[in-house]
Image 1 (cartoon, one colour):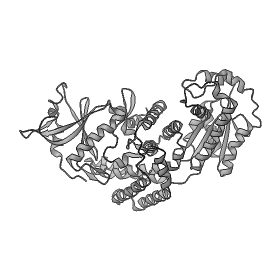
Image 2 (tube, rainbow, N blue to C red):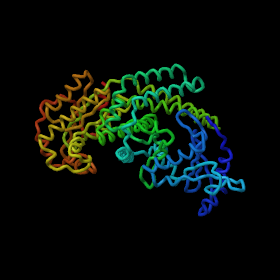
Image 3 (cartoon, rainbow, N blue to C red):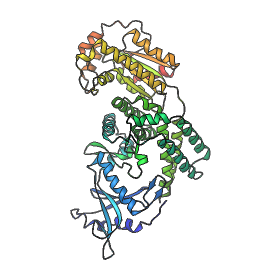
Image 4 (cartoon, rainbow, N blue to C red):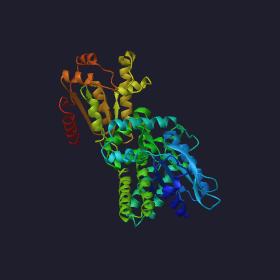
Length: 517
Protein backbone atom coordinates (compact mmCIF):
# COMPACT_ATOMS: atom_id res chain seq x y z
CA UNK A 1 0.00 0.00 0.00
CA UNK A 2 1.05 3.63 -0.52
CA UNK A 3 2.24 5.20 2.74
CA UNK A 4 3.46 8.62 1.60
CA UNK A 5 2.33 11.17 -0.96
CA UNK A 6 5.00 11.68 -3.64
CA UNK A 7 2.87 13.72 -6.04
CA UNK A 8 5.05 16.83 -5.70
CA UNK A 9 8.22 14.97 -6.70
CA UNK A 10 6.47 13.07 -9.49
CA UNK A 11 5.05 16.30 -10.88
CA UNK A 12 8.50 17.89 -10.69
CA UNK A 13 10.16 15.01 -12.53
CA UNK A 14 7.42 14.99 -15.15
CA UNK A 15 8.45 18.48 -16.36
CA UNK A 16 11.24 18.64 -19.00
CA UNK A 17 12.46 22.08 -17.87
CA UNK A 18 13.41 20.69 -14.47
CA UNK A 19 16.22 18.66 -16.04
CA UNK A 20 17.82 21.62 -17.82
CA UNK A 21 20.46 22.45 -15.19
CA UNK A 22 21.33 18.82 -14.52
CA UNK A 23 21.57 17.88 -18.21
CA UNK A 24 22.91 21.05 -19.88
CA UNK A 25 24.27 19.18 -22.90
CA UNK A 26 20.83 18.06 -24.08
CA UNK A 27 19.50 20.46 -26.70
CA UNK A 28 15.96 19.14 -26.49
CA UNK A 29 14.43 17.46 -23.46
CA UNK A 30 11.31 15.31 -23.39
CA UNK A 31 10.05 13.16 -20.53
CA UNK A 32 8.27 9.83 -20.80
CA UNK A 33 6.94 8.28 -17.62
CA UNK A 34 6.56 4.57 -16.81
CA UNK A 35 4.60 3.48 -13.73
CA UNK A 36 4.97 0.17 -11.92
CA UNK A 37 3.65 -0.90 -8.51
CA UNK A 38 7.06 -0.29 -6.95
CA UNK A 39 8.63 2.51 -8.99
CA UNK A 40 8.17 5.42 -11.35
CA UNK A 41 10.71 5.70 -14.17
CA UNK A 42 11.29 8.92 -16.10
CA UNK A 43 12.89 8.55 -19.53
CA UNK A 44 14.81 11.70 -20.43
CA UNK A 45 16.75 11.68 -23.69
CA UNK A 46 19.49 9.03 -23.40
CA UNK A 47 19.00 8.73 -19.62
CA UNK A 48 16.50 7.21 -17.21
CA UNK A 49 15.75 8.27 -13.64
CA UNK A 50 14.08 5.72 -11.38
CA UNK A 51 12.18 6.75 -8.26
CA UNK A 52 10.96 4.18 -5.76
CA UNK A 53 7.33 4.50 -4.75
CA UNK A 54 6.67 5.11 -1.06
CA UNK A 55 4.91 1.79 -0.59
CA UNK A 56 4.85 -0.96 1.97
CA UNK A 57 4.15 -4.60 1.21
CA UNK A 58 5.22 -7.60 3.27
CA UNK A 59 7.84 -8.43 0.65
CA UNK A 60 8.89 -4.85 -0.27
CA UNK A 61 9.38 -1.89 2.07
CA UNK A 62 10.02 1.57 0.54
CA UNK A 63 8.04 3.29 3.29
CA UNK A 64 10.70 5.79 4.45
CA UNK A 65 13.18 8.05 2.71
CA UNK A 66 16.05 6.25 4.45
CA UNK A 67 14.78 2.89 3.20
CA UNK A 68 14.53 4.25 -0.33
CA UNK A 69 18.08 5.61 -0.21
CA UNK A 70 19.41 2.28 1.03
CA UNK A 71 17.56 0.41 -1.69
CA UNK A 72 18.76 2.81 -4.40
CA UNK A 73 22.37 2.16 -3.36
CA UNK A 74 21.72 -1.59 -3.28
CA UNK A 75 20.14 -1.42 -6.72
CA UNK A 76 23.27 0.22 -8.08
CA UNK A 77 25.57 -2.40 -6.50
CA UNK A 78 23.50 -5.43 -7.44
CA UNK A 79 22.95 -4.42 -11.04
CA UNK A 80 26.51 -3.39 -11.78
CA UNK A 81 27.38 -7.09 -11.53
CA UNK A 82 25.63 -7.65 -14.87
CA UNK A 83 25.11 -4.22 -16.46
CA UNK A 84 27.66 -1.68 -15.27
CA UNK A 85 27.28 0.10 -18.61
CA UNK A 86 23.67 0.92 -17.76
CA UNK A 87 23.69 1.83 -14.06
CA UNK A 88 25.43 5.16 -13.38
CA UNK A 89 24.82 6.52 -9.87
CA UNK A 90 22.36 7.51 -7.15
CA UNK A 91 21.27 11.16 -7.07
CA UNK A 92 18.94 13.24 -4.91
CA UNK A 93 15.98 15.49 -5.50
CA UNK A 94 16.46 18.30 -2.97
CA UNK A 95 14.52 21.29 -1.69
CA UNK A 96 16.59 24.43 -2.15
CA UNK A 97 16.74 27.32 0.34
CA UNK A 98 14.22 29.10 -1.92
CA UNK A 99 11.81 26.17 -1.39
CA UNK A 100 12.21 24.89 -4.96
CA UNK A 101 12.80 21.28 -5.89
CA UNK A 102 16.13 20.75 -7.66
CA UNK A 103 17.66 17.67 -9.27
CA UNK A 104 21.12 16.91 -7.89
CA UNK A 105 21.57 20.23 -6.14
CA UNK A 106 22.23 21.40 -2.58
CA UNK A 107 19.52 21.34 0.05
CA UNK A 108 17.23 19.08 2.02
CA UNK A 109 16.89 15.67 0.35
CA UNK A 110 13.25 14.88 -0.41
CA UNK A 111 13.76 11.86 -2.67
CA UNK A 112 16.43 9.54 -4.08
CA UNK A 113 16.77 8.38 -7.69
CA UNK A 114 18.85 5.87 -9.59
CA UNK A 115 20.33 7.40 -12.73
CA UNK A 116 20.87 5.07 -15.68
CA UNK A 117 21.90 5.13 -19.29
CA UNK A 118 18.81 4.43 -21.31
CA UNK A 119 18.61 1.40 -23.58
CA UNK A 120 16.46 0.77 -26.64
CA UNK A 121 13.10 -0.45 -25.32
CA UNK A 122 12.58 -2.36 -28.54
CA UNK A 123 15.60 -4.49 -27.60
CA UNK A 124 14.16 -5.66 -24.31
CA UNK A 125 13.64 -9.40 -24.59
CA UNK A 126 9.89 -9.41 -24.02
CA UNK A 127 9.50 -7.22 -27.12
CA UNK A 128 11.93 -9.32 -29.12
CA UNK A 129 9.81 -12.33 -28.17
CA UNK A 130 6.60 -10.62 -29.29
CA UNK A 131 8.16 -9.83 -32.67
CA UNK A 132 9.51 -13.35 -33.07
CA UNK A 133 13.10 -12.08 -32.94
CA UNK A 134 14.29 -14.12 -29.96
CA UNK A 135 16.37 -16.55 -31.99
CA UNK A 136 18.07 -19.66 -30.69
CA UNK A 137 21.56 -18.18 -31.09
CA UNK A 138 20.61 -15.22 -28.91
CA UNK A 139 18.93 -17.50 -26.37
CA UNK A 140 22.05 -19.66 -26.21
CA UNK A 141 24.30 -16.61 -25.75
CA UNK A 142 22.01 -15.29 -23.03
CA UNK A 143 21.94 -18.66 -21.26
CA UNK A 144 25.74 -18.79 -21.26
CA UNK A 145 25.90 -15.22 -19.93
CA UNK A 146 23.54 -16.14 -17.09
CA UNK A 147 25.61 -19.22 -16.23
CA UNK A 148 28.76 -17.08 -16.13
CA UNK A 149 26.93 -14.69 -13.78
CA UNK A 150 25.99 -17.63 -11.55
CA UNK A 151 29.63 -18.73 -11.50
CA UNK A 152 30.79 -15.31 -10.32
CA UNK A 153 28.24 -14.31 -7.68
CA UNK A 154 28.72 -14.72 -3.96
CA UNK A 155 27.78 -18.03 -2.38
CA UNK A 156 25.73 -17.85 0.79
CA UNK A 157 26.48 -20.91 2.88
CA UNK A 158 24.96 -19.35 5.99
CA UNK A 159 21.63 -18.68 4.26
CA UNK A 160 19.31 -21.65 4.28
CA UNK A 161 16.37 -22.13 1.94
CA UNK A 162 14.77 -25.01 3.82
CA UNK A 163 12.50 -22.46 5.48
CA UNK A 164 12.58 -19.76 2.81
CA UNK A 165 10.72 -21.59 0.04
CA UNK A 166 7.92 -22.81 2.36
CA UNK A 167 7.72 -19.26 3.76
CA UNK A 168 7.38 -17.86 0.25
CA UNK A 169 4.65 -20.41 -0.43
CA UNK A 170 2.77 -19.25 2.68
CA UNK A 171 3.30 -15.58 1.84
CA UNK A 172 2.05 -16.22 -1.69
CA UNK A 173 -1.00 -17.94 -0.22
CA UNK A 174 -1.81 -14.88 1.92
CA UNK A 175 -1.37 -12.50 -0.99
CA UNK A 176 -3.46 -14.62 -3.37
CA UNK A 177 -6.32 -14.83 -0.88
CA UNK A 178 -6.42 -11.02 -0.86
CA UNK A 179 -7.21 -11.20 -4.57
CA UNK A 180 -10.40 -13.21 -3.94
CA UNK A 181 -13.00 -12.63 -5.30
CA UNK A 182 -12.05 -9.50 -7.25
CA UNK A 183 -9.32 -11.24 -9.27
CA UNK A 184 -9.15 -14.93 -8.31
CA UNK A 185 -11.54 -17.79 -7.69
CA UNK A 186 -11.35 -19.17 -4.14
CA UNK A 187 -11.45 -22.82 -5.26
CA UNK A 188 -8.54 -22.31 -7.68
CA UNK A 189 -6.49 -20.47 -5.07
CA UNK A 190 -7.11 -23.23 -2.53
CA UNK A 191 -6.05 -25.89 -5.07
CA UNK A 192 -2.74 -24.12 -5.75
CA UNK A 193 -1.98 -23.54 -2.07
CA UNK A 194 -2.65 -27.19 -1.30
CA UNK A 195 -0.47 -28.41 -4.19
CA UNK A 196 2.46 -26.16 -3.27
CA UNK A 197 2.32 -27.17 0.39
CA UNK A 198 2.31 -30.84 -0.57
CA UNK A 199 5.28 -30.29 -2.91
CA UNK A 200 7.24 -28.60 -0.10
CA UNK A 201 6.60 -31.36 2.41
CA UNK A 202 9.70 -33.37 3.17
CA UNK A 203 12.05 -31.31 1.00
CA UNK A 204 13.93 -29.60 3.84
CA UNK A 205 16.96 -31.86 3.58
CA UNK A 206 17.19 -31.31 -0.19
CA UNK A 207 17.02 -27.54 0.25
CA UNK A 208 19.80 -27.64 2.86
CA UNK A 209 21.88 -29.89 0.62
CA UNK A 210 21.65 -27.24 -2.11
CA UNK A 211 23.01 -24.66 0.33
CA UNK A 212 25.83 -26.93 1.49
CA UNK A 213 26.83 -27.63 -2.12
CA UNK A 214 27.04 -23.90 -2.91
CA UNK A 215 23.96 -23.48 -5.07
CA UNK A 216 22.51 -20.77 -2.80
CA UNK A 217 23.89 -17.39 -3.85
CA UNK A 218 23.09 -13.68 -4.03
CA UNK A 219 21.17 -13.96 -7.29
CA UNK A 220 19.34 -11.57 -9.61
CA UNK A 221 15.96 -12.37 -8.09
CA UNK A 222 13.74 -11.06 -10.89
CA UNK A 223 15.12 -12.85 -13.91
CA UNK A 224 12.49 -12.70 -16.64
CA UNK A 225 12.38 -11.45 -20.23
CA UNK A 226 11.41 -7.88 -19.35
CA UNK A 227 14.61 -7.58 -17.31
CA UNK A 228 16.98 -8.65 -20.09
CA UNK A 229 17.99 -6.36 -22.93
CA UNK A 230 20.45 -6.01 -25.75
CA UNK A 231 22.90 -3.22 -24.95
CA UNK A 232 25.73 -2.66 -27.43
CA UNK A 233 24.58 -5.92 -29.05
CA UNK A 234 25.21 -7.89 -25.85
CA UNK A 235 22.52 -9.49 -23.68
CA UNK A 236 22.43 -7.90 -20.23
CA UNK A 237 20.43 -8.50 -17.07
CA UNK A 238 19.06 -5.43 -15.32
CA UNK A 239 16.57 -4.52 -12.55
CA UNK A 240 17.79 -7.10 -10.03
CA UNK A 241 15.98 -7.31 -6.68
CA UNK A 242 17.56 -4.96 -4.17
CA UNK A 243 14.74 -4.53 -1.67
CA UNK A 244 14.59 -7.97 -0.06
CA UNK A 245 17.62 -10.22 0.33
CA UNK A 246 15.33 -13.09 1.25
CA UNK A 247 14.06 -12.98 -2.33
CA UNK A 248 17.48 -12.34 -3.91
CA UNK A 249 19.49 -14.92 -1.94
CA UNK A 250 18.30 -18.17 -3.44
CA UNK A 251 19.12 -21.36 -5.24
CA UNK A 252 20.50 -20.40 -8.65
CA UNK A 253 18.01 -22.82 -10.24
CA UNK A 254 15.19 -20.95 -8.50
CA UNK A 255 16.59 -17.77 -10.03
CA UNK A 256 16.65 -19.37 -13.47
CA UNK A 257 13.14 -20.77 -12.95
CA UNK A 258 11.67 -17.28 -13.33
CA UNK A 259 13.06 -17.01 -16.86
CA UNK A 260 11.95 -20.55 -17.68
CA UNK A 261 8.46 -19.82 -16.37
CA UNK A 262 8.24 -16.60 -18.35
CA UNK A 263 9.19 -18.36 -21.58
CA UNK A 264 6.66 -21.12 -20.93
CA UNK A 265 3.95 -18.54 -20.18
CA UNK A 266 4.63 -17.03 -23.59
CA UNK A 267 4.45 -20.53 -25.13
CA UNK A 268 8.13 -20.38 -26.07
CA UNK A 269 8.62 -23.95 -24.92
CA UNK A 270 11.57 -24.68 -27.20
CA UNK A 271 13.36 -21.59 -25.88
CA UNK A 272 12.76 -22.64 -22.27
CA UNK A 273 14.03 -26.12 -23.04
CA UNK A 274 17.16 -24.70 -24.66
CA UNK A 275 17.88 -22.48 -21.64
CA UNK A 276 17.50 -25.41 -19.23
CA UNK A 277 19.71 -27.68 -21.30
CA UNK A 278 22.44 -25.03 -21.63
CA UNK A 279 22.32 -24.57 -17.86
CA UNK A 280 22.65 -28.31 -17.25
CA UNK A 281 25.52 -28.56 -19.74
CA UNK A 282 27.41 -25.85 -17.83
CA UNK A 283 26.57 -26.97 -14.30
CA UNK A 284 25.71 -30.68 -14.42
CA UNK A 285 23.04 -29.79 -11.87
CA UNK A 286 20.84 -32.85 -12.39
CA UNK A 287 19.93 -33.01 -8.69
CA UNK A 288 18.18 -29.65 -8.95
CA UNK A 289 15.60 -31.09 -11.32
CA UNK A 290 13.75 -32.66 -8.37
CA UNK A 291 12.91 -29.10 -7.26
CA UNK A 292 12.27 -27.50 -10.64
CA UNK A 293 8.49 -28.06 -10.84
CA UNK A 294 8.02 -26.49 -7.42
CA UNK A 295 10.34 -23.61 -8.31
CA UNK A 296 8.38 -22.95 -11.51
CA UNK A 297 5.09 -23.04 -9.63
CA UNK A 298 6.31 -20.66 -6.93
CA UNK A 299 7.58 -18.22 -9.55
CA UNK A 300 4.26 -18.22 -11.40
CA UNK A 301 2.36 -17.84 -8.12
CA UNK A 302 4.38 -14.77 -7.20
CA UNK A 303 3.72 -13.33 -10.64
CA UNK A 304 0.01 -13.87 -10.06
CA UNK A 305 -0.20 -12.01 -6.76
CA UNK A 306 2.09 -9.11 -7.73
CA UNK A 307 -0.35 -8.35 -10.54
CA UNK A 308 -2.98 -7.34 -7.96
CA UNK A 309 -1.32 -4.03 -6.90
CA UNK A 310 -0.05 -3.53 -10.45
CA UNK A 311 -3.66 -3.53 -11.68
CA UNK A 312 -4.73 -1.20 -8.88
CA UNK A 313 -2.07 1.35 -9.91
CA UNK A 314 -3.31 1.51 -13.51
CA UNK A 315 -5.45 4.55 -14.32
CA UNK A 316 -6.55 3.00 -17.63
CA UNK A 317 -9.36 0.53 -16.84
CA UNK A 318 -8.71 -1.54 -19.96
CA UNK A 319 -5.04 -1.93 -19.07
CA UNK A 320 -6.00 -2.83 -15.50
CA UNK A 321 -8.35 -5.53 -16.77
CA UNK A 322 -5.59 -6.98 -18.96
CA UNK A 323 -3.31 -7.13 -15.93
CA UNK A 324 -5.99 -8.95 -13.92
CA UNK A 325 -6.51 -11.40 -16.78
CA UNK A 326 -2.77 -12.04 -16.82
CA UNK A 327 -2.86 -12.72 -13.08
CA UNK A 328 -5.46 -15.44 -13.63
CA UNK A 329 -3.29 -16.99 -16.34
CA UNK A 330 -0.31 -17.10 -13.99
CA UNK A 331 -2.43 -18.73 -11.30
CA UNK A 332 -3.49 -21.48 -13.71
CA UNK A 333 0.09 -21.91 -14.93
CA UNK A 334 1.38 -22.16 -11.37
CA UNK A 335 -1.05 -25.00 -10.67
CA UNK A 336 -0.26 -26.80 -13.92
CA UNK A 337 3.45 -27.08 -13.08
CA UNK A 338 2.65 -29.36 -10.15
CA UNK A 339 0.51 -31.78 -12.11
CA UNK A 340 2.08 -35.22 -12.31
CA UNK A 341 3.39 -36.35 -15.71
CA UNK A 342 5.11 -39.62 -16.53
CA UNK A 343 8.59 -39.03 -17.97
CA UNK A 344 9.76 -40.66 -21.18
CA UNK A 345 13.18 -41.98 -22.21
CA UNK A 346 14.22 -41.53 -25.84
CA UNK A 347 17.38 -42.78 -27.51
CA UNK A 348 18.59 -41.08 -30.69
CA UNK A 349 21.41 -42.87 -32.49
CA UNK A 350 23.18 -42.71 -35.81
CA UNK A 351 26.54 -42.06 -37.38
CA UNK A 352 28.16 -38.63 -37.46
CA UNK A 353 26.26 -36.23 -39.68
CA UNK A 354 23.03 -38.23 -39.56
CA UNK A 355 21.26 -35.38 -37.78
CA UNK A 356 20.72 -37.05 -34.41
CA UNK A 357 21.63 -33.97 -32.37
CA UNK A 358 19.29 -31.82 -34.44
CA UNK A 359 16.44 -34.27 -33.93
CA UNK A 360 17.18 -34.56 -30.21
CA UNK A 361 16.97 -30.80 -29.71
CA UNK A 362 13.79 -30.54 -31.77
CA UNK A 363 12.15 -33.37 -29.84
CA UNK A 364 13.21 -32.15 -26.41
CA UNK A 365 10.53 -29.50 -25.84
CA UNK A 366 7.81 -31.82 -27.16
CA UNK A 367 8.24 -34.57 -24.57
CA UNK A 368 6.20 -34.84 -21.33
CA UNK A 369 6.97 -32.42 -18.51
CA UNK A 370 6.71 -28.65 -17.99
CA UNK A 371 9.86 -28.00 -20.05
CA UNK A 372 10.17 -31.30 -21.89
CA UNK A 373 13.32 -33.41 -21.85
CA UNK A 374 16.91 -33.04 -20.78
CA UNK A 375 19.21 -33.85 -23.71
CA UNK A 376 22.29 -35.86 -22.75
CA UNK A 377 24.73 -35.58 -25.63
CA UNK A 378 27.76 -37.84 -25.57
CA UNK A 379 29.98 -35.22 -27.23
CA UNK A 380 29.23 -32.68 -24.49
CA UNK A 381 29.70 -35.17 -21.66
CA UNK A 382 33.00 -36.33 -23.17
CA UNK A 383 34.33 -32.76 -23.28
CA UNK A 384 33.17 -32.10 -19.71
CA UNK A 385 35.22 -35.07 -18.49
CA UNK A 386 38.30 -33.19 -19.71
CA UNK A 387 37.13 -29.81 -18.34
CA UNK A 388 36.51 -28.48 -21.83
CA UNK A 389 33.66 -26.36 -23.13
CA UNK A 390 31.48 -28.18 -25.70
CA UNK A 391 33.00 -26.43 -28.72
CA UNK A 392 36.64 -26.81 -27.64
CA UNK A 393 38.66 -29.42 -29.54
CA UNK A 394 39.51 -32.62 -27.67
CA UNK A 395 42.64 -34.53 -28.61
CA UNK A 396 42.85 -38.24 -29.44
CA UNK A 397 43.31 -39.12 -25.76
CA UNK A 398 39.62 -38.37 -25.30
CA UNK A 399 38.47 -40.93 -27.85
CA UNK A 400 40.00 -44.15 -26.57
CA UNK A 401 37.73 -47.14 -26.02
CA UNK A 402 38.22 -46.76 -22.27
CA UNK A 403 37.05 -43.13 -22.32
CA UNK A 404 34.15 -43.99 -24.60
CA UNK A 405 32.95 -46.60 -22.11
CA UNK A 406 33.15 -44.06 -19.29
CA UNK A 407 31.17 -41.61 -21.40
CA UNK A 408 28.43 -44.13 -22.02
CA UNK A 409 28.35 -45.19 -18.37
CA UNK A 410 27.94 -41.51 -17.47
CA UNK A 411 25.11 -41.17 -19.99
CA UNK A 412 23.30 -44.11 -18.42
CA UNK A 413 23.80 -42.99 -14.81
CA UNK A 414 22.66 -39.45 -15.54
CA UNK A 415 19.67 -40.68 -17.52
CA UNK A 416 18.63 -42.85 -14.59
CA UNK A 417 18.92 -40.04 -12.06
CA UNK A 418 17.06 -37.52 -14.20
CA UNK A 419 14.23 -39.94 -14.92
CA UNK A 420 13.91 -40.65 -11.20
CA UNK A 421 13.45 -36.91 -10.64
CA UNK A 422 10.40 -37.09 -12.92
CA UNK A 423 12.03 -35.46 -15.95
CA UNK A 424 12.07 -36.89 -19.47
CA UNK A 425 15.45 -37.67 -21.06
CA UNK A 426 16.86 -37.91 -24.58
CA UNK A 427 20.20 -39.70 -24.98
CA UNK A 428 22.02 -38.41 -28.07
CA UNK A 429 24.96 -40.66 -28.98
CA UNK A 430 26.10 -42.89 -31.86
CA UNK A 431 24.81 -45.99 -30.04
CA UNK A 432 25.90 -48.31 -32.83
CA UNK A 433 26.29 -51.36 -30.58
CA UNK A 434 23.54 -53.71 -29.43
CA UNK A 435 24.64 -53.62 -25.81
CA UNK A 436 24.58 -49.81 -25.72
CA UNK A 437 21.03 -49.65 -27.04
CA UNK A 438 19.87 -52.51 -24.84
CA UNK A 439 21.32 -50.89 -21.71
CA UNK A 440 19.33 -47.76 -22.41
CA UNK A 441 16.11 -49.67 -22.91
CA UNK A 442 16.71 -51.56 -19.66
CA UNK A 443 16.69 -48.32 -17.69
CA UNK A 444 13.22 -47.46 -18.94
CA UNK A 445 12.04 -51.02 -18.39
CA UNK A 446 13.28 -51.14 -14.81
CA UNK A 447 11.51 -47.85 -14.05
CA UNK A 448 8.40 -48.94 -15.98
CA UNK A 449 8.60 -45.86 -18.17
CA UNK A 450 7.92 -45.47 -21.90
CA UNK A 451 10.93 -45.85 -24.21
CA UNK A 452 11.40 -44.91 -27.84
CA UNK A 453 14.57 -45.53 -29.82
CA UNK A 454 15.37 -43.88 -33.16
CA UNK A 455 18.18 -44.82 -35.52
CA UNK A 456 18.90 -42.21 -38.18
CA UNK A 457 20.14 -43.20 -41.61
CA UNK A 458 21.22 -41.00 -44.50
CA UNK A 459 23.40 -41.34 -47.61
CA UNK A 460 27.14 -41.03 -46.99
CA UNK A 461 27.22 -37.94 -49.19
CA UNK A 462 24.57 -36.22 -47.05
CA UNK A 463 26.33 -37.03 -43.77
CA UNK A 464 29.71 -35.94 -45.16
CA UNK A 465 28.31 -32.62 -46.33
CA UNK A 466 26.71 -31.95 -42.96
CA UNK A 467 29.99 -32.67 -41.17
CA UNK A 468 31.90 -30.30 -43.45
CA UNK A 469 29.38 -27.50 -42.80
CA UNK A 470 29.58 -27.71 -39.01
CA UNK A 471 30.50 -24.52 -37.15
CA UNK A 472 30.97 -24.28 -33.36
CA UNK A 473 29.69 -27.81 -32.83
CA UNK A 474 30.42 -30.10 -29.89
CA UNK A 475 31.30 -32.98 -32.22
CA UNK A 476 34.94 -33.30 -33.28
CA UNK A 477 34.12 -36.01 -35.83
CA UNK A 478 35.30 -35.41 -39.39
CA UNK A 479 34.65 -37.35 -42.58
CA UNK A 480 37.45 -39.81 -41.74
CA UNK A 481 35.69 -40.66 -38.48
CA UNK A 482 32.47 -41.20 -40.42
CA UNK A 483 34.24 -43.64 -42.74
CA UNK A 484 35.38 -45.65 -39.73
CA UNK A 485 31.89 -45.63 -38.26
CA UNK A 486 30.42 -47.01 -41.47
CA UNK A 487 32.43 -50.19 -40.89
CA UNK A 488 30.66 -50.85 -37.56
CA UNK A 489 28.39 -53.85 -37.19
CA UNK A 490 25.25 -52.34 -35.68
CA UNK A 491 23.76 -55.75 -34.94
CA UNK A 492 20.03 -56.30 -34.84
CA UNK A 493 18.34 -52.91 -35.09
CA UNK A 494 15.17 -52.91 -32.99
CA UNK A 495 14.88 -49.13 -32.86
CA UNK A 496 12.71 -47.22 -35.33
CA UNK A 497 14.80 -46.41 -38.41
CA UNK A 498 14.22 -42.88 -39.69
CA UNK A 499 15.16 -41.51 -43.10
CA UNK A 500 17.39 -38.61 -42.10
CA UNK A 501 17.89 -37.53 -45.70
CA UNK A 502 14.47 -35.92 -45.61
CA UNK A 503 13.84 -32.36 -44.51
CA UNK A 504 14.36 -31.95 -40.77
CA UNK A 505 10.69 -31.17 -40.28
CA UNK A 506 9.69 -34.47 -41.90
CA UNK A 507 12.06 -36.50 -39.73
CA UNK A 508 10.75 -34.71 -36.65
CA UNK A 509 7.14 -35.27 -37.68
CA UNK A 510 7.74 -39.00 -38.08
CA UNK A 511 9.45 -39.27 -34.69
CA UNK A 512 6.67 -37.34 -32.96
CA UNK A 513 4.07 -39.57 -34.59
CA UNK A 514 5.81 -42.70 -33.29
CA UNK A 515 6.10 -41.28 -29.76
CA UNK A 516 2.45 -40.22 -29.64
CA UNK A 517 1.50 -43.75 -30.70
